[in-house]
Image 1 (cartoon, helix red, strand yellow):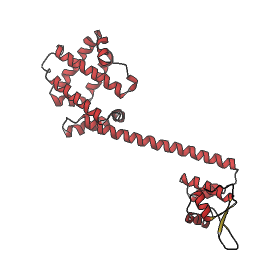
Image 2 (cartoon, rainbow, N blue to C red; image 1 turned 90 degrees about the vertical axis):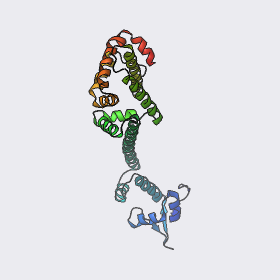
Image 3 (tube, rainbow, N blue to C red; image 1 turned 180 degrees about the horizontal axis):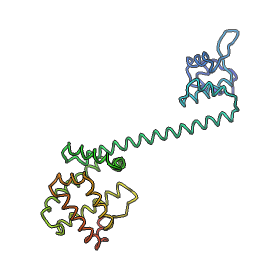
Image 4 (cartoon, helix red, strand yellow; image 1 turned 180 degrees about the vertical axis):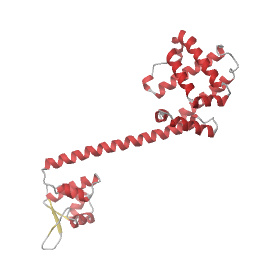
Length: 271
């Protein structure tokens, strides 16, 4: 590349190469008065001065910011000092940086939401397709639905398939004890497994809860929220009628007995 400090005049091809701008573009800038070329009175050839080269760099800069040629002409012909012009360029760059960052964040959110939807499809993989679509739609449309999708977006497809298999296996085993009283050991053991799985899932979804666990009151509140969510109730009822209510009562019993009196034991299971 030519060094503009070493020469005072540029043929049009030299300036084209220097600024990485086509000759055709320079002709256009000349025609509209944005960058007027001087003429060699002997041969009529266009040539440019060092000031023209500097002006062209400014034009290139503004074009990269997607300013129209009319706007660029107004800016570059305004009566202002070099410092004022640099400050103006700096302000434009900061504004563009802000706009670009906003676009990036929106794209990342869109990608995250899409990944979350795909992971929900995997999580509902063992369910009837129509039901799965209905549950996914209900989850997404509830308050905090976007947060749910973004939370699931952090898992790989392999992770989600593992979670789906664990959930399906647990539900099938719970169906086998539905006829048993809620306080029976076989039931409480499975509720304890669900408690461990729930705490681990919460920690994975929200790093703020890492190395923490839900105590008896916290898990009771979690259970009440789950019961109020029609999607979770429908999912349990898909396995067996009465599943959701039996699990709800068994979990409250677990909170008031197993978890309240033996919290350290269950904390050790989570870790």
